[in-house]
Length: 474
Picture 1 (cartoon, rainbow, N blue to C red):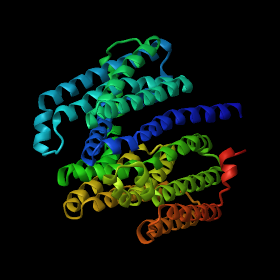
Picture 2: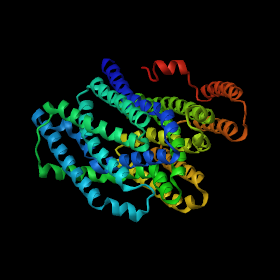
Picture 3: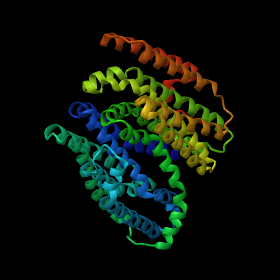
């Protein structure tokens, strides 16, 4: 029991370390949309998207090897050498990536006919990614050492400094999009030094080719699945840049920013539920436990999806410049994909527990193919609507395949009915019912949301008060 409580405590702290920096970044949203044009915002989102994608390529999933094999090392010295060897490889590999972009990047982006200049925007993203890699393995180390508070303090402080520096550069010095990108670059560079310093006692620098061969044999098969996931979730923005314009990219990115808040809460909830899934896996009561977890998870997701969608218009009216107000139209379309991606994460854990990790990768690849093929065909014809719907279609397809493959004999009617209720509520109060008076709209939607909360709790058999105290009790 004590071990379980400690696990939940550590998981909660880790989740806060991930969630709080994202929320801090969102605080800058009204400031950025006031001082940046849609085109500027599109540039920032595009470069950040590129950086996220590059981070997967930069590690080749070697951090997964580190997490799996850290405790299989024969002694503490071997653990330090493993971290040193992986760090040496990753840093050297990423120096080559930076050199490649410096030599050929401008030509490649010119060939792609991107609307965003390689200098200075893309190269800042490349350098930001280089400094970001220094935090990945140390973060894994602190998780393995069960030092959640130290890691959380580092992540939260990094988020705070990034927020302050962004505001200073954008508001005080008028750097617009460059201000946001420079802030990210500087903060990642500073914290690269911080992570190197704080891990100095846990690392022995070396270069062991034999060990690296073993690492890559394990990690490289994981790369396609990881890349496919990001291709599914970010290819729409890359293709908007190609087929539409930067203003469209800015509007779409703004809508995605609001919709992706659901990810913040779903990730936090998932982090709290995840240990119970692995802990109870294989037990005779697993299906009952998983069904309770799923219903609670669906409840949280639907409340978040309905809230973000029906209040999206009022949100943009208050929190953004007038040029961004139309972004609310795309939020519900995008949020369906965010919802399905979160449910996919839950069932993906079951598939992982079964040891079928390659299946997760294959399903991600299927989603990536759907996303790219349909976006290439539909974006030039139908614009942003197709980007939002295609993204959600791809993630929904992945989710349904995973649910089918997991083959869990549990009740499925409740989440389906809850989903239908959520979709109908969103459709009515975003696309059909338009209340001109701002305060009347807020008042009516609060009543609607309250009613939805009550109905969902009945449909999903969830007691929200007990859920807060603890989902699974023995």
